[in-house]
Image (cartoon, rainbow, N blue to C red):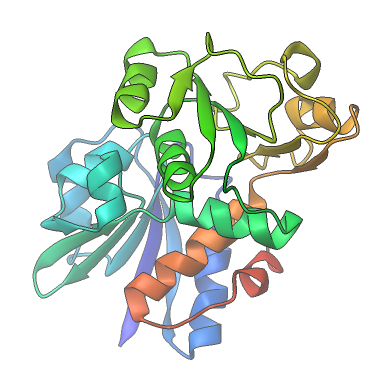
Length: 260
């Protein structure tokens, strides 16, 4: 079989996902290719029409993760909880969905910082599709608490109502162990010096990766914090994605090599 892979969303020209797909195919000894599909605002029918006819499997990025969830015939437990899908698979005439963003974030965090989130106090900027996956993963990995700072009150409220230990920014925290920027590039989060509870022991992760050193991330570096951009999460969630597609173990570090 020659796998027809792709990544769909908008904007998409900057996406490094095809390089990750190509490396994963090589590592698994499989044949295929991957391409970018620009789709700024698709309805469910448009997205589902790609599956089977043109593609065997897709990565899904903003702003289509909720739409992707709506076209699936079945979904994994994470995507059922979060309502978003970043991985689609066509099999036997059915569309299957999964969400690997959150678990991939945790795998990258451990690989890059040897950090586990059990009992951590975490601040997440953002409450959209990517943030939902990250917050879900943090909660299920026993984070002590998660504070969400988002632009859309309804999205923040949804996360707070879904978890006992997730709070809004009015919740006072003396020290944050981890701060995550899950906001789009055009909606920057407050800089490190503007956030109460941040010091040199805080780990800062910006899940965007263009530019590699964003002003937000640089503000934490200037405070002496350890930091990372989103390349690690991108690679490690892709490793989980292809494992779900093909049942093959792929080392996220091997994928990261082709995009760093």
